[in-house]
Image (cartoon, rainbow, N blue to C red; front, side, top):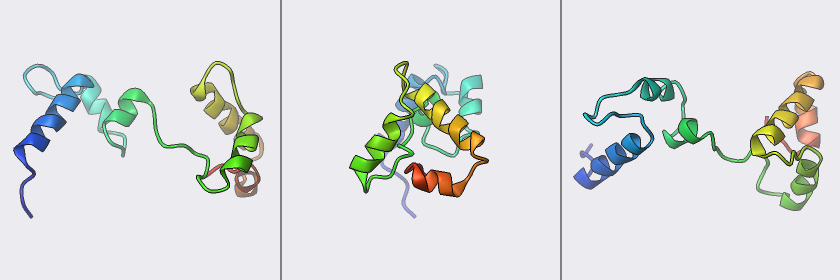
Length: 103
């Protein structure tokens, strides 16, 4: 296996520094250590933005289903409303299917 190009390594280090995962000396910060607990790219745990839980196919119907959970305060509260509804339905896979939510 070949080593990655130096430009890629530098870009990755710059990104980690901009996310406060590395300090000015290139050492892992406390936040950086916490970010390693997430099995995602570093930007996800830092920014809390991940792929949509609604399926890409059947988008129009999924949008209608999503609308009933919509919270005007933002996506995080919308996702919380989805989770609470799923929890109230005993984490049912059928509920997920009916509401176009990927469990």
